[in-house]
Image 1: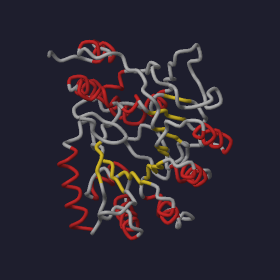
Image 2: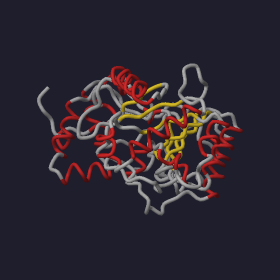
Image 3: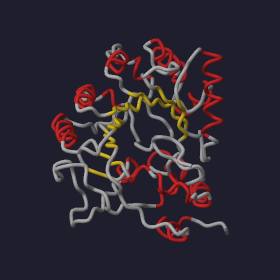
Length: 330
């Protein structure tokens, strides 16, 4: 296949060229709640553009409406809480407790260093007490690479947080307290083999720091927000987008997370995925209402068959082995 630039081949056309139908929803199994953009870090690759000065944050009324919807959404199995640093939201613990009370699996997307934040010293114990699954960001197992992407001293704090979690029982072989690590490339590259990288992470973290964890997920850097700005500033935008387009893998399409996930923003708007949320690409749905909120629907179940809104950034989820919040797809 000749080299193609994104402007020459849209995502929908690529699906058609590979005999794949337009993306439509299956039943909703995961609700991902973005509680806001406030974060104690400001990472170079962040697709949320989060940081310590961001004021967008979910209020209690919105959180209460989400829990009310969960109670009327029997198909939803998992509540995935993200940010920013979701733990900085005053409603985070309430959301965890209420979602757990409803019998849902709860995931906390944690940047690790927040566990050492002043005033949050009991956060680890809280997460363990409620059997919250932790999916933690650690873009490398060396200090140089992590601090380059996330800021000076972040690696040392991250290691300390992982050791704390291990002491609480997280990540240990056979433990029900699940601890997963997320890797994303340090630049405009596709992730390496998830299986091989997991083995390397386990060897390095166990050997140097005595750290155990369950699984490693590889995520492709999405060409939106802060990472997109960096690509344009350094003149690497075209090359990166061509990389994604040219590595489109039709084998990933059936497993794309947008098929069974609803993303809820800090202000209650509904999206097909967290990436669409950051680009403010609303759900298409089957009705005239194109920008629904949690107050416009009576359940998050029953959305199967609706068309999924797509864009050029979708090549990031379908390149190579694919990418989702649960790691590689193929």
